[in-house]
Length: 315
Image (tube, rainbow, N blue to C red; front, side):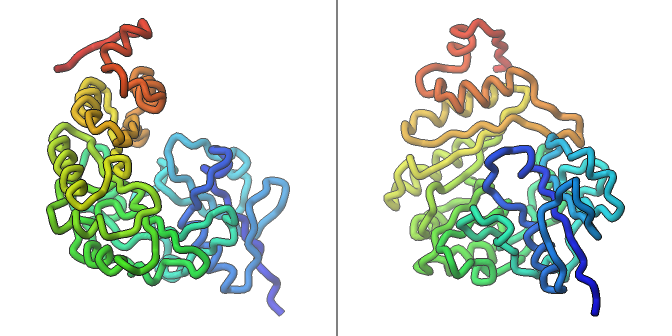
């Protein structure tokens, strides 16, 4: 009788971000595949010995456990490992597995992708290099869970793919509540798309991105179109990329904050593969000016003067 293979899983973000509740998609599929082979799967413990250990790291700033490198059979993956090719993929037989949610018992929603890839080539984004052009990937019926009606979709540009739009249409009236957590491209929203979005049942927010000034007017248009279909501004969530040109982000904030209940969320640009690390002012803008809610009552310039910190306008 074959001895059971003991598999250890290491989620770098789970160890680093205490209280993390968002599961690692790749590790759940790896766990499911090994359990289907009759193997034993558990979270990696540096004090134990395993036949194989899988480590996944999403963010390049997340530190890896130094004891991992003492493992004899270590398989690493994820964009967080800067020494690995950006386009590493799971083997097909593992990628086709239904995720093992039992390893994240606190997770009460399904996750997955309906499409993969993106046709855009934004300089700050790794998706085109990692996944290629946009294409169909899964049906929502293949990724929902029987024990919850919540579905979180991680598609990077679902509205750029006719298949993705068809999937959103078929979700209408399905009984499932959805969240597209990467932010949609407002430039792709017309009256028909706004109608489709308004008829879906959302877990909380309908999310869009406004990473450059050219997206301000499309975002405004989205707010107006969704309003036509009775979607209130407080249901809309906007991601804002914050580059070294902080004034650019400040201008986007000023252009959008007139919609009083809209939710703005700043993300300082970081890509350590390219040597891009946010500076103190970017983090100040992200963590205190936006997260702290100061932007609602004052401009970035006024905030800097009140705090006695340097201010530079690139306008």
